[in-house]
Image (cartoon, rainbow, N blue to C red):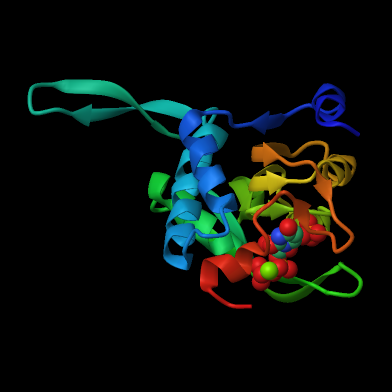
Length: 218
Ligand SMILES: O=P(O)(O)OC[C@H]1O[C@H](OP(=O)(O)OP(=O)(O)O)[C@H](O)[C@@H]1O
Ligand SMILES: O=c1cc[nH]c(=O)[nH]1
Ligand SMILES: [Mg+2]
C-alpha cells in the first residue's frame, strides 16, 4: 500500500508534521550525526511526539488553593500513565516521553530481531501492576516489518491492557499495514513514513540501525 492508501484505509495514523519534528528527523538520518547528538535528538523527539500523542488525555477539575483564593482547576485524571519501551532503541524515546509525565510508570519489553528470520525474540518483560487501568504508550523509534511492535502490543493485551497507543519515529509502509491488521484499535503517532523496506528489512531511506546509533555499538 502507498502512504496515501494507508492513511485512507486505516484510522488513527498520525504523522507529526511539525517543522521541529521534521528537522530533527532529518538530523537523525544524517550519517555524520554523532552518537551523542543522535541520543539527544531521539529523546527530544520523544517529548515532542509524546506531546501530540497525549493531547486527548482526560482531566478533571480539582480544588486547589492559590495564594489568593480557592479555585477548581483541571488535573490529569485516572491512574498514572505507563510508558512501555521496546528495548533497546525504545529507551531513548521513553526518556523523552517521561519528561512530560515524570511520575509515569515504565514497562520494559526486551526484543531483538533475529538477523536471519527477522522475527522478534523476547529476552525480557517487566510491567507495572494494573495495566488494564492505565493508558499505555508503547515506544520504539523504528517500525520496519512491524513484528516487534505487534508482539509487544500482543503482550500488553494478554495482560489486560485496553487503552494503548504507539509512538515511532520512522515507519515503513509494510510495517504500518501489518501493525494495523493486527491492532486496528491502537493509534499510531509517527514521525515519518519512509519509502520501503530493503532486502534486509531495513527502512529506506531510514537511519540505519537505531539501537546501534543510540548506543554506539555495531
Ligand atoms: O519492525 P521490526 O521489523 O520488528 O523491526 C524493528 C525493530 O528492530 C529494532 O530493534 P533491534 O532488533 O535492532 O534491537 P535493538 O533495539 O536492541 O537494536 C527496532 O528498534 C525495533 O524494535
Ligand atoms: O531500519 C531499521 C529496521 C530495523 N531496525 C532498525 O534499527 N532500523
Ligand atoms: Mg538494533
